[in-house]
Length: 325
Image (cartoon, rainbow, N blue to C red; front, side, top):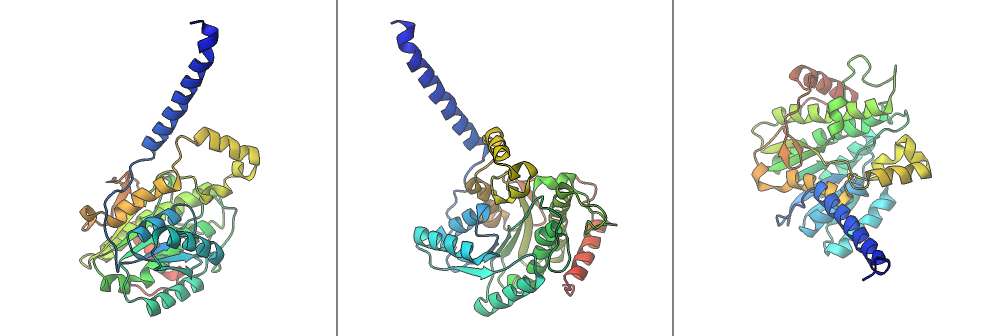
């Protein structure tokens, strides 16, 4: 058979093989799905940032397991749209949209008050919402936005819900952190980034704060039946990337997406490590840990120590006007 005849077929099959291989590699790098079939009937779960990205996929999975899920979101229109889709897909009507703007401590307190009126139990709290590398801005209380949302907002929310979590034990708190904590530094003299603001540094600081909060809270809740763990979901393509400088340009978005496509997880894959830490029976007594790829990983960071954790807790308590637990 002449080469000119078989050449198009050769190139076609080679192209199909390469594309297929890329998809298989992407699926492999994205990690495994959480496949255990826990029935969450009558279990109450709160998921922050539930109206997009990882949060939506976490809610979708929990809904299929028959959990009662409170979707704590800032944008009620988006939340309701997502909620409707998941209710129709899962046939689980026990999904609720509730306003919770983590950049407003008043909103957080209102959310908790409403939740306690409607529900007497809380079995899982997933602190998922986050913001990354945003322009310099501040929360309603004047806290740098990334620190305010990623750490302070969840710090306040969690502490206000501790009485319900303890009454519902065994219960779990999951703090969604990031590997970015490794380059983070708690700026003891400029925690609020007033003197100097670098978007990437502020994000890393907030993710390190998640780790310190997890470890400190785990110690505070010892022997209560409430566990607290942090998890890195991987690098996931979600709306959290919208503030990256190159993402402000159409060609920049195309370039980043093309170069990183094979390495960046889809939201559904990013949800799996969170589901593992939230649900897996083997972790019922594990607390104060940091999980990567479904395994507890040592946090080798010089600032992850009791002294800085205590300092951050004290500052967080003051800035959120929270009475010590």
